[in-house]
Image (cartoon, rainbow, N blue to C red; front, side):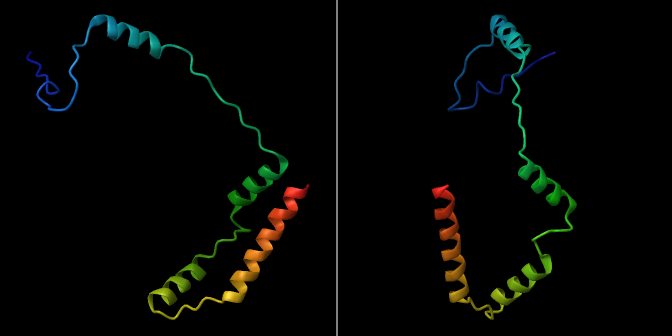
Length: 101
């Protein structure tokens, strides 16, 4: 059986001969135990995960997104700058208030 070494002919790739020692050390490295991480969700996180899994209390409205996409594509979408500004200010207030705690 003939085996062609295609990497030797590839310009720009480093060539290093594979040795039996390298193969054995790689095999030993693969048998080492893999460390694992543990994650615990807070009660709030568990509630969020449960509500996301149920989908009944979903905030995402696909039909509304489609209507907005159509309005943008048709040039009919208008941004209510007052509503955007009010929402931005409310978010900043919430962030500042949470820092004070």
